[in-house]
Length: 220
Image (cartoon, rainbow, N blue to C red; front, side, top):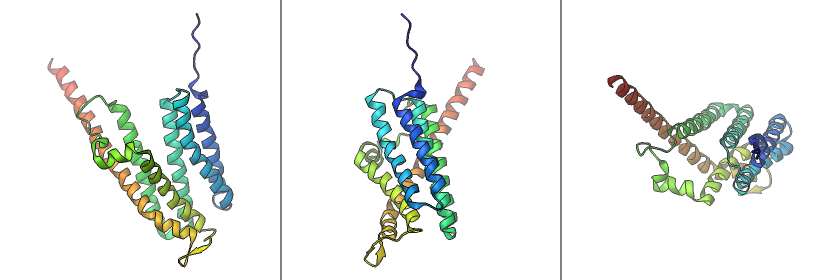
């Protein structure tokens, strides 16, 4: 009997991922001038991020390609938004640059180190063992609120360049959302830094293990 070969690129969650990319690109194109259209495409792309995970589990189609596609789309979307914000608020360009660098580099380090370590050694640092990080990793509500708050901060800054919205406590609703969500964005950034530090330590552990293995072969 001939075995049917699966096409990972056509798995349902990956097709959703392609839709996310198309919507993100459309959002990038309209960001400088068309706020409503850009925000709509950006938000729908972000919402599909939650749906593709459910689709992967439902259809039993979780793949490394899909996980990487998802991560790259998230990082690229945030980076493009920060680039636009730097043009809207040039006074704060440095902070947008730092935030973008932390987001991209720390996530890349953590993802890469996770793939290399394969969770096979107790010598690796596992942040999920920390009570606070365990809550962050296992409580979906906390994780959602952290991610949503982070997105709300940057999105509110973006929209505030075009509209302030109705007034509450003497402030427009969008600037107010930016102020209220700023602490969440800061905590999310600090967590990203922690990811980067732990990933660096784990990569150094891998280096030491590989060097020890090479030395052992040379002695033998």
